[in-house]
Structures are given as C-alpha cells and as structure tokens.
Length: 435
Image (cartoon, one colour):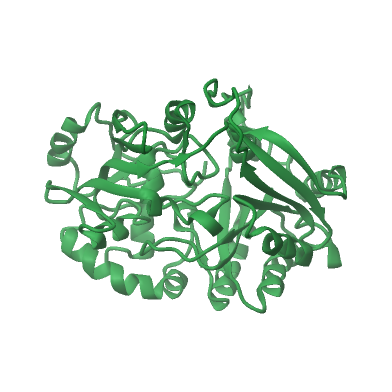
C-alpha cells in the first residue's frame, strides 16, 4: 500500500495481444506480474502491462522435471501442478502468489540461497520481447548477456513472455524442520555457520527490540526435504487463505510497545533445547499467504520493507548489530526482522552477495524515511546493497555506489537493446537506470 500511483494499465488475454498493445501504447510501459514486489518496480503512470492472464502451461517433461510456461503462471500454480508428480521449485520466495515471469525479472531468492543461489540459476531459457517487437529466446549459453541482464533487470530489457525452468525432484510434500532459540546475535550467526553443510534451508527471526547483549536474539530454523516417500506427495494442494483482514487496522494498533511485547513473547515460547518436527511446505515457506490482505494490519499508510545485505567478513556480526542499533537509537521499530545467509549472485542486478540479508518491515512515516536514508549510507559503507525489487525510496547517488560495477556492465547493453527507453518504471526513473 506504499507507494501508490495512478497508472494507465493494459491487460492482454493472451500472448498474441501483446504486439497490438505495444503498437498502441503510450511512450513508455513496464511489464507487471501479480504485483507482489513491495516497491515501485512495476509502477509507471504512462503504462503498465499486466501479464496475469498470459498464464498457460506449455510443456512439461515428467521424467526430467523441465517445465515451460507463460510468464503469468504463478508459483502457486506451478506447485499445485508439479508437486504431485514429485517435483518442486528449486528456489521459492516468501510468497507463492508471485508469477514465474516476475520471479525471473526480480531474480528472487529464498531460504536456500546459500546452497541453491537465485531463481535465474535454474532457468534454462526465457522468451523475451524486445523494444523493436522482435522476440528472442535467450539462455545461460545463448544470448547470455541478454539473459543475465534480464535476470534481476526488473523488466527494463523487455517483456518476459515464457520461461523454461528446471524443477527439483522431491519424495515428499513435507519438510523436517529444526528449531532452536538463540540468546544473542553472535549465537544466531554461529547457528547459520554450523548448519550450512547439512541444511537445505535456513532462516532466522530476530528480536530487534531487545536491549544490550540480547539485541538480535531470536529463533533459528533449518530444514531439509523429507526423503522417504509418503502419501502427502500425490495429495498435495497449496494451502489457501484461512482468514482475511477485512479492513485497514488503525495506525496505533502496531506500535513500538506492542511490537516489543510480541517479540518478547515469541522468543520466550520457543524451548531452549533444539527440537525437530515435520511440517508441510506452506507453513514453512509462506506463512503470510494464509492471511488474506495481511498488509492491512499495517494501516492505511502502508509499510516499507527494507531488505539489505551485509557482506560476510570479520566485522559481520558487529555490522549487523550497528544496523539494529540505529533503529533503536532513532526511537523507531520494525514489524518484522528476518535474517538469511546468501552466496554470490550471477545476474547483473541481482541482490545476493556472500553475507547476511536483513528484511525489516517499517511503518510508512516521514521519520522512517529519514532513518532508511541513513541506513542506506551505513550499508553502502559496509559494501552492502539494498534489494531493488523491494525498494520504494532509495536515492540515486547511494544506489550508484551500491551497484557501481553492475551499472558499468548493464547500461551499455540496455542502451543497445532499448535505445528509445520504451521500458520504464517509476523505479527506473528514480534511480536513473536508463540514463
């Protein structure tokens, strides 16, 4: 619910409608999937091409797990189709309602980035419509410059119309999830380090409201796919919304005091001794998908998610602590604080670096905007960066510092592919991606 812009929209019913729309559209346009990214990457007042209805499954090899589908197919639809056949998405973000085209254009990551990388690493080819109307099928071997510029390129190289992805074979629709309570930020980092070689997924929830040495304490979870075949595979159906938030909550409902109490209770209810339980996919990967319109809990003003990555080095723990301390010093709070471990990225504008990402949800207020500008400077000084797919307010100078090397490689290619700047978004204008 932030930012909000009034945009001229186009919604093709099928792929064949796209050329006619482009021929009649305003000067600029941006492709958009299901609108699951938090920022302004798929906003453009002059034109937004919504691809939700271009959602056909085109080909699937039951033996190899190679799937081809149009860009508007959602991850939820892929799971509903593939899991009963024993296949799973190799990388899956925090919502299954995103589209396959959007997942590639944002080059999303999941809780297994440390071992599986980002989404595009498992994509075998994509069909992209360029600004001149031609369509190019590119891959990691053919037209690889276009492929990697488009992976994480946020629609600025062209329209992703179809994706071929290699799925991952599984034996069960369940995970073995290990949970442990950690008393300090250092213990959280140690838990990630101890589980890197054995876990398939890792994530940590942190209490960023705790004081002193307890700052950064929380709950660490690791998980592996259940290996033994069971009946849940063939019977799998993605979980649907259990409840729905009917209206926007009052802005005072979630405040620094109520969130401090929530953080304390969540930390306290987890036993000190590690435990392991079997869980279905949805509860582990997509807990928020079970709550319809969950963003209304944050009030009409909406919220801003700030996801940054802190490079791994001798100062990693102290650098993460300094980010959390800045929030406390400002007298502000986040609704959520999640930490994940990453490896290096492959896409030009992809987010990951070897290190730890923090995902923080803030209320949309002037004071928070000031704080996030300050955090940008801190993160840039550490050699880190902000995730563009979730950004709604970063300033161009600090963005260019964070992505300096990537911009040198990306801008000449995009200028050649789109000399008339046909593909534009509010984010691209704000950050000068096409200049």
